[in-house]
Image (cartoon, rainbow, N blue to C red; front, side, top):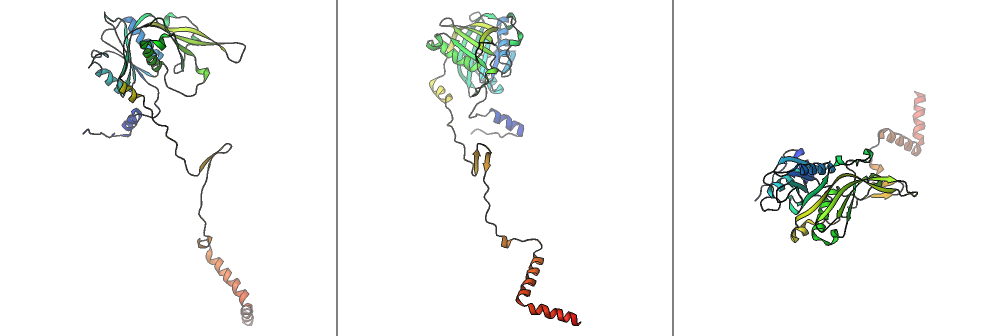
Length: 315
């Protein structure tokens, strides 16, 4: 039987609660790391992907020898780093004679490998090779448009899988409402062939159109590159079903004696039991009782009061 350790202080308890499963998950973090051999081009690609994901990404620059995502036993280090950094998406870069400038993009479920896509990087152009107005530079944390152009993303199995992974990688936190003024950049993925995708990053420029809706123009700000799909591994059916489970919408518990009003807002009702005023201890009760007794005696026996006056006069 496994021993369950309880947190020793509130800080550890808060950290564990933050990593615990939630009904509504927050944005996914991305882990970017590299193998023993990388080229200058691949290092630039990893750095610029980190800049695109800045704020929701972690970059490891040390070389990792034991990571081989597609081989059995080579996933242990990846799963350990995923658990350590609480990242559910990773990008692993390596280069070899057989697979130059190689990127492996993968997702994890419960900090275990869920699926993998391996692509080769070709025709890479970095950010500093593009000339544009710096006022159009995308802001950190803004939401992007993601555009997939081409029938291959609907018909070719490898490109369909790549599309799923790229959407998870680029979209950030899932939200319900969005301010259109905050949309300032777009990712455009074009299926050139059955195994090649052109990827580019563009800024959005708003121009007058003569109507309420402005006209949008795309300004390429980089980076851009070609992704050549090499290998991919889909999750097995049982793991997919488990990962796709969603919690039932729990109805909110009705709060008693609390209602809502369109004008006054939240309204509460307070129930007070019947008050027994006769049994309540009132201040100066003795004085009031004496006065009542005197008044009652005067009403019942007025001669007694007159005799007392006569006695006082005689004295």
